[in-house]
Length: 162
Ligand SMILES: [Zn+2]
Image (cartoon, rainbow, N blue to C red):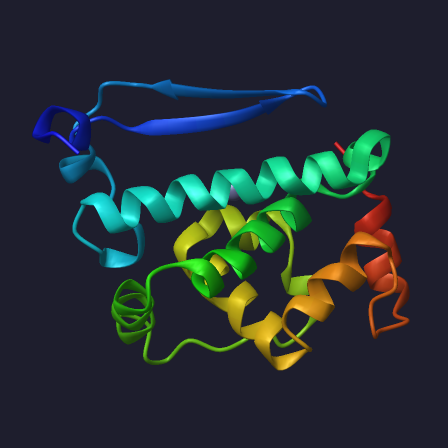
């Protein structure tokens, strides 16, 4: 990746069921954003791209049920998968930067306010929660609404769309 490319912010947006847009905002990412406190470079850039591809895969998997899964759960899934598939060296650095991180203690914690307050910490908690609840199997259960919980809260969160 060229230094010029490294300085650009890449954003991927899923549009419709068949189109994935990747745009560059030309912002100096080194000043503006350091995901999980990681210095900007190829490993974190690829990892962010993988996060966005998870969104696209989930969207493709859900089809016309896409909007039925609350937006924050889309983020939960992308963040839960991201550390699982990132380079092991990067994963070690990310987790080392969050030595006191905990999995979400309650499903209600997976909400837009917690996400907006600190997306990076939300992501670590989502990952740890997923690991503690079955890993990839848990993600699959979310996608088919067969989570190993029968809380009304989860159904409420699932049904809170938009
Ligand atoms: Zn995302």
